[in-house]
Image (cartoon, rainbow, N blue to C red; front, side, top):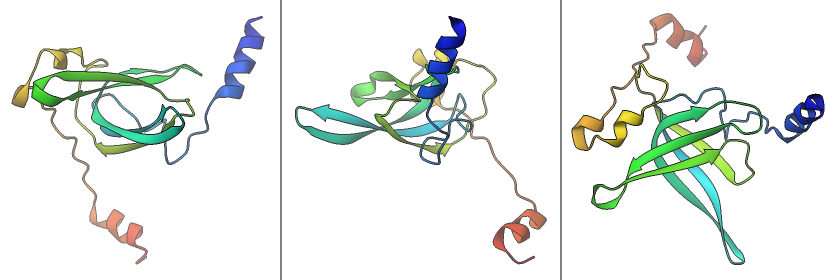
Length: 135
């Protein structure tokens, strides 16, 4: 029975594309998730930008929880299933240096206290030369 469930899970998995970078998403990343909203007969894309505070890895039920501060300082959290057809695109805006798997402590913080330190990626001169095609 469990083999049957695993095979069904594998069929429903979304392939990792450039629109939804499944392997590159980490807790602490600032992302913009474009989610398809259905209102009556119409459909539209609604972007939701915030910080990933929780990531649930798994097969077909993998998801991320994104938190942002809305109007008047009210925190808004939204959970996005990664293998859903309604999730159009996930843009990674910046990476942050975090040391925890779940960032629930951001719920109590507001303003400057809720900021995360950006993870800097340094590129050496040899990497720049190889990337630009000069070699």
